[in-house]
Image (cartoon, rainbow, N blue to C red):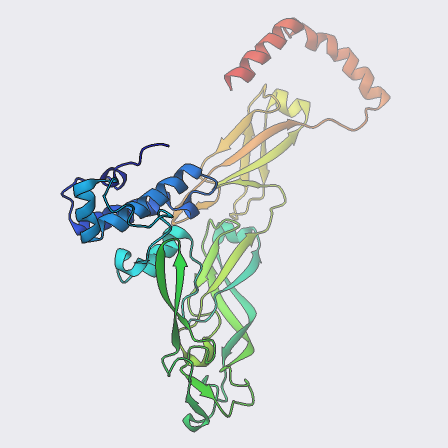
Length: 380
């Protein structure tokens, strides 16, 4: 059997460590090695159990004194009894302070809902591609639970129509105690009997049946900023669900934006990429082309003579605005393509054969061309 490690070594402490230093070191290591943060890692689970045992001893002044005198070979045997360390009653609130709930949820994945707040909502909204260039003002209609007008969100028309909730004595919250490993976690939760209001409705509102909310169709306005990407979520505070019986604040509305595709542009951040199919003569002799552009000014593309399919032409500052820097824009990147006719007429075939010999004379031997093309490809 492997020898047990020194408790001070496990918690990365000196032997003269203070109570605050012991607590601080355990807090740091618990975040690092908790099994929820290290799934399928037996070593982390082993270290976390070691840390719990070490803290259980060193945080107890009497047990620490015995450990400092005798180490693991104390004369009265293990402080945890014949079964060894099985967990002790250590309060999370004591270790992590009063704000433990938020700390624990950040590091250990707690999903406890904030009490008394209305639910957040997520809505998907599509905008035309032009909105990514110029931005736009949008308006949507959503169905959402909002405060009942008849009872002003109270669930009843009078205070006399309700009584103090016996489950929570009017506090709106109940305390729940649960064990997580060797720790006792105390949390306060919304009372399910009164939905956090502290009062039981004896004569509920006929319109909302005592909930204080009704499904309503609401118009919401918001703005799209230039340069927006698909998948961006806009947060509109207070436009989510209202809380039950006015107990808290309304949730938020998140609008996830989908930017519709353009007819020929693809996006790479703020850059716009397009393919430009050209004839052989356009590539060989060069050409200047003007096409409509989404910024309202024609896009002029100059194809140099002797251009090759696959080459690109970059036109700076004609792409999309960069978010938060609307005066700065990306580029338009034009990829040159050779556009071949679907069929050649007999007369065209004869003309091509006449000039093919002259064209072949201008080319290097085939093997040399293959080698040069391979060099260019590897360089790129």
